[in-house]
Image (cartoon, rainbow over all chains, first blue to last red; front, side):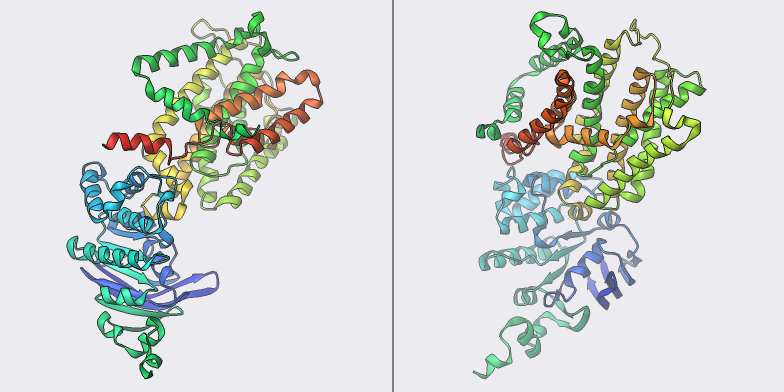
Length: 244
Length: 351
């Protein structure tokens, strides 16, 4: 698995939201895109998964340009997204949500139980809630369900859109622990989009900083965590604080 | 009156049904079908004479509008209720079925049963033609385009001399004698039984679809289109499918309708019909087949039952609709709320 975005441009009408960004996600990595609201993080993910059309540039997945492919073909290739805002099906039960996560798999019958067990092992809370409607879960549980459901498709690369959004600090730590586990134990490559730069940089191998549709910086996540400019802009513990 | 909101016949019915074993269920279904099949005789006995429609033939009313509305409401429910696509031009498919029957009866020697699949295919084809470009649109836009389509079909019929323009097509053949049943103006019951058989077939078919992949896909599309895409559901394909199934049912209704009235004309296929069928779906309970059937029966039967008050009946009908929709905004028998019934059942299975 290798995902490469080359000089990608995306437009909403006449407004260019992504202005020619390039980045690479290598097999087994956690790569994070950090940046403020409106930097184009979510648009980038939506474009990779096929919800937004490409204006120009390429998305190369395993040596193949997928930028013109339909969204469901990309899912079949192993690209799976847990959408922003915990986009689960509110009127379906937890189990039904997970089952539909397998929609793209031809082997869905034979794999179903095994993968349900796998997801329940990662998220024991979901097992307690199997028959509850998705819409009645707490925010953290919905996020778990969104990630668990994405895993049901046995993705080669998992796209996570702001998994920490709107969650309590305890739950954020919990979710990020599980993301690390998914990467380490299942070997799933992860592209993580986050506003919570602190957590994202601690968990990721490499990071790209997005500002108004451009990549302005890229480095190892650890280095960025110690970068004064990044600290000032995204970690709220910047240079001024150092002077005190 | 406020209690009307909380009456939950659907869950009561479902619980009762769940409690029964197979023979009991079979017996219930057989008795129910038999009773419905005997409905045309309901006007004959003093204790059921309340069913009678004073100012129109009760047996004819059972075929059109009652049977036809139920059939079409079931078809439209696949589109609106199951997949959440607002179609305001459903009458177009009814018209295409009707005109196919008219034209083929005029120019060929095919009988109604042979025309039936052709009429359905024609309606389906129109469904694909309309669906492919328009089903990429969402919500309100789709509603407007389908509304336009319904009008276009009627206006084209109205302005095409070769299909009779405003006078339409007359002397359409009635179906041949089949299984000892005669089909003509004196034998409305035969039509009723045919429509009933079609309704049963459609119920069976939709039940099969709903528990299988297409049903899951439609449900996902209805709840959240973007997320459905992310799950790998080819949404355009399933939307077109749902459109086609709805269209085929509308087309079938059109063929039978034409063979019953023996004549079709543009003024039978107005926007009004689309709205009425949609009302059946919404009034009965969008997405729930049994609710939709109930809605179809009530909305088709009620205006005929009170026809004796002539012009005031539309007013009474309207007021009844407004009052009931206020009391039960989700319809008479709304779609299952998953967190209740479905939840309890599934939990039981998994233990």
